[in-house]
Length: 404
Image (tube, rainbow, N blue to C red):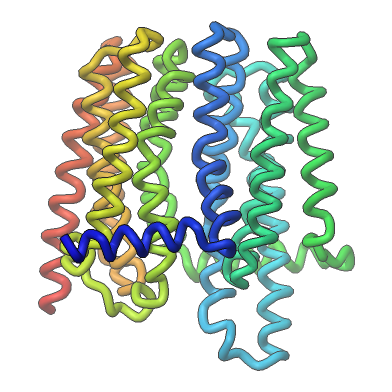
C-alpha cells in the first residue's frame, strides 16, 4: 500500500510539473488527433470525406514508414564525442542524405497511390501532407535529442491543430487539394527557421555518396524495412482489399496503438541510454514494474475507449475483429522491446533471413485473402498467428545468440 502511494505521488508530480505539462499534452495530442478526426467522420456520417482522409493518412504514413531509413543513427551516435570538424562534416552529410531521401520518397508516392487506385486529388493532397510529415519528423527528432521539449511541443501542437482545416471539405465543400496546399504552407512557414539547407549542394555527387552509404549499410536498412512493414502491413491490406472498412480500421488501430506509443515515449525513450549500452535485457523489461504499470494502465484505458465505441453502435465491425486486433497490438508491444534490444546488440544481421521468411508468410496471406475473397476476420486471425509465431521464434533465436 505504501509503495502504491509512493508510485501515485511520483506520477502526480510528473503530471503536474510545469516543465512536463506541454510535453505530455503534445504527446497526447499526437496520438489522438488523427483518430479523433476519423471518429468525427464516422459519428457524423461523413462517409465520403472519411474514406478520403483515411486514405490520405494511410498513404502518407506508409510512405513515411518506407522513407524511415535510419540514416540518423550514424549522425547521432557518439555525436558528443566528435571533434567540431568531424561534427560539421557529419552534419553536412546527414543533411544531404535527408534531402535525397525526401526527394526519392516523393517519387515513391506515385506507384503507392496507383497501388490503391487513388485519383489525382488524393495523390496531390498526399504529397502535401506527406511533405509536412517528413519535414516535421526530422525537426522533431533534432529537438528531442537536444531535449528542447518546449519548442517541440509548439511545433507538434501547431501541426496537429492545423489538420482540422480539412473539415472544411465536408462542412463547406472546399476542395481537398486547396486545403492540403493551405496546410502545407502554414506549417512550412512555421518550420522554415529550422531548415538551414545550403543550395550549393552538388546533387550528383551527393546522390552517389548516398547510394554508397545504402550499399555499405544494406543489411541494417533492409532489416529496418522488414521490421517497419509489420506496423503498416495489415493497414495496406485493409486499404487495398477492405476499403469500405478503412476509416474505422485506422481509428481502431490508432486507439489500440496507444500502449505501443506510450511504451516508446515514456519507457524506451527514457531508458534509451541503457538500451544503447546493452544494460537492459528483455527479461529486465517484461518483469519491470514501471513497464507493466505503464502497459496495464494504457491497455486498460484503450479497452474502455474501444468498449464505449463498440457499444455506441457506430461500428460496422464484429466483436471478433476487435478481439483479434487487441491481441495483435499486445504482441506488437513485446515485439517492439525485443527489436530494440536486438538492434542495439547488433544482432540484426543474424535476423535478416528470419524477417524475410515472415514477410513471405505475410505476403502469402495477402494473396490468399485477395484471391479467395476471405473476410476481414479470417485475415486478422491468420495475421495474429504469424505475429505470435514470429515473436516466439525470434525470442528463441535471441536466447541462443546470447549464450554464444
